[in-house]
Each structure stands twice: as C-alpha cells, then as structure tokens.
Image 1 (cartoon, rainbow, N blue to C red):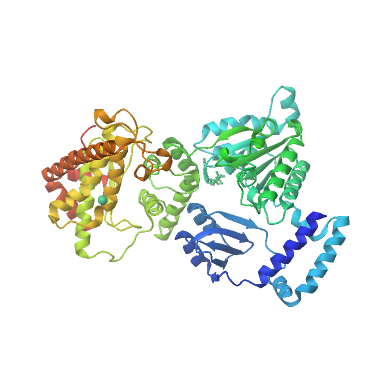
Image 2: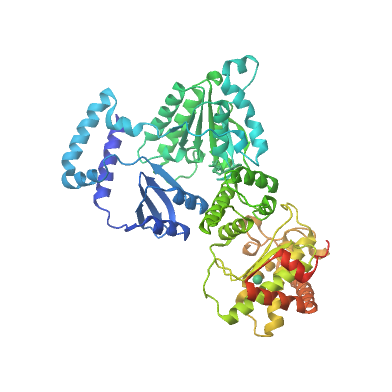
Length: 590
Ligand code: ADP
Ligand code: ZN
C-alpha cells in the first residue's frame, strides 16, 4: 500500500515537472547535430525512449532529437563512453502531454482512483510499470567461434553449455555448476557476446536486462522488475539471464550515499539476492552479470551460491586482435594487400567492439570510393580517423607552416628510423588530423609489457627529433609545434628517475613522489625533502641534455636524408615505410 502512495506522489511530481520545464533549457536538434554534440564531448548522458533521444549536456541543458535508426548514435556513444539508457517508448506520447496540460486535476483523480482499484486485484497500469524490461533474444545464433581473442574466458564457459543442454544428466555425473557468473571486463571486450555465445551453443533462450533500468525513480519498481525477470526466465528453463552493468544495483551497501536512489537500489539488490537464492543449482537457470568494476560490488553478491564464479574478459593482446579482426572481416571482401597482423600491431588498446567498428569504417570508406574490395589503405584510413579524428583537408596551414611541419615530422621519422630501440616508423604525414598538424606513426612489433631502459631513451630521442629538425632549418626562429613532444619526453624522463629507479646510482634506492595522486608531476605531497628534489631535477636535466645532444648530432649528420624526406612530404603529403626504406636505407638492427 505504501508503495502505491509513493507511486502516486511520484506521478504528481512528474506531471508538474512536465508542465513546467522552465529552468532547464531544451534544444531540439536533428539526429546528426545530436551525434556531433556527443562527439564533441558535450553530452553527459543519454536516454533513449522509442524514437526519441534525450541528452543531458555537460552545461546542464537538455537536447532532444528524433530518429528511427539509432545504430550510428549508439556506436558514437559507445566510442565516446557516453552512458546511455533505454526506456520503453511512452505509449500515449504527445497526447498524454496534452491531456496533462489541459486537465491535470481530473486526470490525477482518475489515476488515483484506478490505482486504488487495481491495488486490490492486480493488473493495470501499475502492473505494467512494474514488469521487467528484460528482452528475450531469439535472433541470430552466436557461437563460441564468434568470440575471438579471449580464449581463456571461452574455456571457462564451456562446462556451462554441457549443463544447459542437459541439467539433470550433468548433475548426475557430479558436475557442480555455479548459478551466477560474473563477467569482468571493460565495455566492448565481448562480455555480452560471450554470454550470448553460451546461450547459442546450448540452444537455450537468452534474457538480457540492464541493471541500470532496474533503478528507477520509484521505490519498489526495480525489485518488482527483478522478480518479474526471474519469473519469465523460470518459464523458459533452461535459459540464461544476462544482467548488464551489474554495479548499477550491486554497489556496496552502507557508507556514504547521496540519498535519493539509495533505498531503491538496496531494495533491488535485495530482491536480486532473494531471486538468486530462490532457485536451486539444478534448475537450469544461469545468471551472468557483467561489470567492469568488480571491486565496487557488494560482497553479498559474490557469496557462494550467487555470483561465485568470475570470468575475466580482457582487452585483447596482439594475437587476440588478429583473431578478432579475422572474425569480423569474414563479412567483408578484402583486397590481397590486407595484412591483418599489421593492423593488429597498429591498434594497441582497442577492444573487440573498437576493431569491429574499425573494419566497418574501412568498408564504408571503400564503398564511398566505389571500390569493390577493402584494401589496406582503407583500413589505415579508418584507423587514423578513429585514433586521431577526421582528416582536416583544405588549407588550414599556410605554406610556411606546412614547411615547418614537414621538417618537424621528418625529424621524428628520421630519428625513429636511425634509433634501433625505437618502434619501427610506419608512416609520416603532414595532413592535419584532429589536433595534430602532422604525424609520424610507428608500430610496435608486439605489445610491450616491460620497457627496457633503451626503449624509453629511444622514445625520448624520437620526441626530440621534431624540434631538433626545426632548429636545423629555422635556426633560432623555432615554433610552438613541439609542445606536446616536450611534455611527453619530460614525463618519460621524470618517470625513469622517480618511478623506475633508472637514474644515477644515488637516486636508485627508492621511488619518489606520492603515487596515489596520479601522475608524477602532480605530487603536492612529496615524500622527499628539498635537497632530494633538486637532485632529482638535476638528474632529469642531465639525462635530457645527453639525449638532446645525441639527437642534434644525429640530425646534423643525416641532414641530407632529413631534407629529402621533408621535400617528399611537401610533394605528396604522406610517406609510407616502404618509401622511407628507399630514402633512408635499411634500419640499423637493435
Ligand atoms: P561488452 O558486453 O563487453 O560491453 P559486447 O559483447 O557488447 O561488449 O561487444 C560489442 C561487439 O563488439 C560485439 O557484438 C562484437 O561484435 C564485438 N566484439 C567485442 N568483443 C569481441 C571479441 N572478443 N570477439 C569478437 N567480437 C567482439
Ligand atoms: Zn612533434
């Protein structure tokens, strides 16, 4: 009964809020404008409701748009890590708004009346609101073959398939199956995909629900949705229930909260625990929950009999990326020059979703050029676009500026080429992209987990290459273009001395600085004294001085090569590694 009063109160409040949108600014946009706002980082979160999308902007405004196809939008939101939620479309839409505005008192009375009546017999409006928003998936079968690059996670899920195919037989053979599996990994690494593959392999229904949709404005709704979800699932056993973003309900209880949704979340969590305890392990329901922050989960959730098995779905390493690219390129006609290993090398840090998106962009680009196959150039184009933003064609640089950029980039490329421990230079370009005016791409030959000292020094050297080349051609009249290079090389040098104990012997006893505070320059709370501080500064300076001297010399010695590359860049804008080799000769061995 209490719940109903709260619902009514909530409805009244909501109605008033709808009537009086003053205070917040709402802008109606076209869907393409909306997407651009998401891309520029203007949008903090998005709510999708049928064909309407509503975004909260970072400046506390609201933007709305209408669209019937939101695949592009969801992709962009995912890419920019903008959280979004879906709501079922309002059944009555604008009519309801109109009614509310015209005769709200009458309507409220009616609502109240109906709500009271329904409370006795069940059913009706309230019942609808309390129903779970779970979706039952029956479309396209996903199998383990579709999940690439995370072999260990797949292995961990194989016994679930045996179990779901024949629960009682599996139990008779003494198999012990957890009811709940926690899939841990960042978004886009394939948690949902893996859960669907388990369902696909075992041929059982797959229910998904987003935990954030459980936590609504009204206390009690979430709990009821959870109950409903498990009831639906029970009717379809054996089956899988997949709960995305489990941390939305499963955060640790107690501690500081900001009030409001707290009660609701707690009730929802309790209901989830009750539901999981309510069926026994042999009933053929497996609950898979996804999270990327397992440490924030309430410990009650991870107790035996609940989410007691953890499967990590990590970001893929280089071999994993090759496999994922292979899976997703099956649908795409590839030209003979495509080497997915090279693509994998150049996409360190990308998730499965990112890689899928990369191939998709490449295919779109190839289609735009009216090609019937996707070539390496298309893939590289897509990758550059994703990493660095779109190309900015047109004359955004003056002739003189182009000249500086060409020499600056040639400096990076030349030093990279001549320094054995630097990553091989892959391509140099003076086409501006995103914030960068020019770019020298290098490709690591493998994912590095352990950097050697010489590799760090090589990175510093390559970063010095740009400015040293400017110096060579411009003399004293150097430019601001090296700012980012200097920031990065300073950070590397400092970290070598304060974090990795790679400095002079007398500083090699310990680390310096309060690492909790994040990056090394930020330490306001230093864990060393003033004398040590000046020794650190001196060590950083002397290290960098030696590097800069080496690079200056190297560039002077190979001036002819530098000028040749710069001329080539001014002529054709982009130079690939093959052409570099012709220009510079083979790279020195490490
Ligand atoms: P998560 O649930 O971890 O956020 P998803 O499973 O929703 O990630 O991944 C989104 C899409 O990205 C998948 O549908 C799939 O196309 C692609 N993808 C992600 N990870 C992989 C992977 N390991 N292998 C193949 N495709 C993947
Ligand atoms: Zn530079």
